[in-house]
Every structure is written in C-alpha cells, then in structure tokens.
Amino acid sequence: MLEAAGLECERGGRTLFRALSFALRNGESLRIAGPNGSGKTSLLRILCGLLTPSEGEVRWNGTRIQGLAEEYTRRLVYLGHAAALKDELTPLENLDVASRLAGAQIQPDALRWALSTLAVPDLPVRKLSQGQRRRAALARLLLSESAPLWLLDEPFAALDAGASSFVEELIARHVSAGGSVAYTTHQPSGLDAAARVIQL
Amino acid sequence: MLEVLRTIVRRDLLLALRRRSDVATALLFFIIVASLFPLGIGAEPNQLRAIAPGVIWVAALLSSMLSLGRLFAGDYADGTLEQIMLGAAPLGVVVAAKAFAHWLVSGLPLVLIAPLIALQYDVAPPLYGVLALSLLLGTPVLSIIGGIGAALTLGLRGGGVLLSLLVLPLYVPVLVLGAGSVDVAAAGLASDGQLLLLAALLVIAAAFAPWATAAALRISLE
Image (tube, rainbow over all chains, first blue to last red):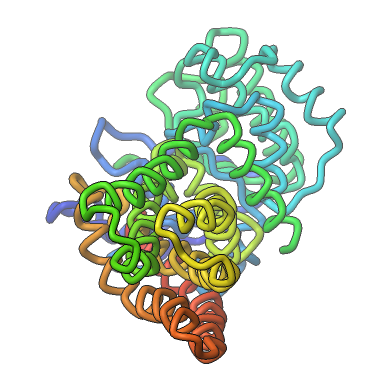
C-alpha cells in the first residue's frame, strides 16, 4: 500500500500543492487530474522518490520510501514524460537494457513478443515516430506485470485509438490482478470510471 | 548488481561505437594539442625532451575534459537517468560503471597512442613504458573525479566552461604525479614512488568519488 501524508511541493518559489494526503491500496487506481503546471508530474516524481517533497512523506507498506531505497524502487514501474529511449539503439536493445537496469532478466523472445504486440518496428529509435517511441516505452509495462505499483505520466499521449485502448486494457488487467496504478492524463479514458481522482 | 554494471558498460560502449565521431574528436584533439607544442617552440631536442611529460599530460587532461560533459547529458535529456535512479542497483555502482566505460573510450586510447606522441618529443624509448603506465593509472582517475563535475553541472546552460573550472583544479595532483613520474625516470631515478601514489589516488577515487557523483546527480535531478 502506498500512502502519502501531508505532501507539499514547492517548485521555483511557488507552492503547487500542500497538505495532500491519500492512500493507494492494492487493486486500486488513482487518476491525478489538473491543468498544465499544477504539479501532476511533480507529484508522480515525489511518489517515485525522485523528488523530495518540501513537507510530508511517502510510505510504502508503512515505511518511508527514502529508507527503503532499492527495496521500494524494485517494486515500481515509472514511465515519465521522456521515453527513456536511446536514439542510436533499436527498441529491442533499449528494452533489454531497461529491463536489466530494473533488475529483471528477460529472455529475448519475451522482449520481441512485447514489441511486436505493440507493433513497434525494428529500426533505430531515431527513425521512429513520436507514437512509435511511446509504444516502445510502454512495452515495458507488458514485461512488468509482477511489479505491484505502476506510476504512469500521460500514458496515452501521442497514441492512436487502438494503442490507447490496448494500454487501457493492460492497466485494467493489472489493477484487477491486485496491482495499483497512479496515472495522469488529459484525455478521458475507460479507466476513469473505476479510478479515484485527485484534483490538483 | 554485477549484471547492472555489465549492462551499463556494454550499453555505453555500444553507444560509443554507433557515435564514433565523439570518440575520434577527443583522440584527435589530444594528438593535435600535443603536436602543436613542438611546432610552436621549435625543434630544440633538449627543450622538447624537458617539456614532453608535462605537455602530454596536460593534453590528456584537456582531452578527457572534452568528453566529460557528455557523461550524463544524454541520459539526462532522454529520461534514462531517471530510470537508472529507479533501477535495481545503487546509483554509485552505476556511476562507477559509466566512469569505467568513459575511460575505456576516452582514456585508454590516449594510453595506447602516448608513445607515438612521445616520439615527436624525442623522448628516450625506455621512458615510453613509464609514460604509458602513468597514463594507465592516471586517466581513470580523471574519468572518475570528472564525474562529480559532470553531475554537478548537469542541465546548466554554459555548463561546459563551469565544468572545466570545477574539475581542472581537482586534476592537479594527478598531473603533478603523472608528469613527475616521467621526469624522475628521465633523470635516471626510480619512479615507483610517483606511480604508487597515482595507484593510491586511483583506489581512493574509485572508492569515494562515485558516491559523491551519485549525490550530485540526485541534486541535479530534483
């Protein structure tokens, strides 16, 4: 269970949010809503531990995440704004490196299956379109079913309708299997009905 | 953890292989800077022999500086650095792996080509070994310590100049010991002392600097 207690975030001398508390239990999804610049990405980065909140703390199963370090990060998947892909490498090489960095040893066949499921072509990432890059980044989700916590920043950005509904399905399946998801989005999606909303 | 180390080194080498021009520029810079001095000073063999160790070492420092800015910049820009920080291995280990890959690409070629440069300065052949050995021990220290500066200046505008101002003073002990070892050997004395001190510097830097770099990266990413 992920708990946020009294979070306050200050960026560039401006307070984005204060006294923000919530809990995200297993099998729950949470939509972080708000206009541009309201601190959605900052909140996700705080939940990952990439950003330290100016007040408050984040707890995973009752322990502060700063104390858990790798114990905590191993249990989460974070997909940020940037796709974390290297232009010079192919999507397969990128996915291989990403999964090894996350501490998982995944067979090349599984990597290829994840990429072909999302219809990512086998070209250097430099030659891919924005949507194809996004798909290559999202392929990590297909291989991370075992990570209980997914933190997704704009997972539907730049995706076409088919890919969007595929990702929706993927997230819904993860939640029904007992995982938890926190995501930000501007587009209405099929997940919104089941998700709790935090308005920033 | 070893797996992550291996992954990072292999990935950085693969990236260097696909961006060969980056590697070539640092090496050519070293060769050109070291070749300018004989042209500027004139071909007086005794003078050239006297300045050779210092000039070759300063050129090595500058050439190592040149590629330092790219150590984390690429990973920072495309979001890979965030994923690395959320990865399974402690950040210090990843930093050490990146510094090692940086040395393989920017330091090791200098070690191999230094005897050729020394030829231009009419350095006595028995000294080639000492020169190469001092570079072999010293250039990894440059990559490891330089990482701290690269991490601190990450994402800053005009970070390149600031990086040199931060890092070059830290390079002084390496320069003094490295050039000193060749000077001492040229005077016919044993240079073991300088080389052992360089080795000690390498051990200390490898043990502590990656953690300082990791802390600097955390600050830069906030």
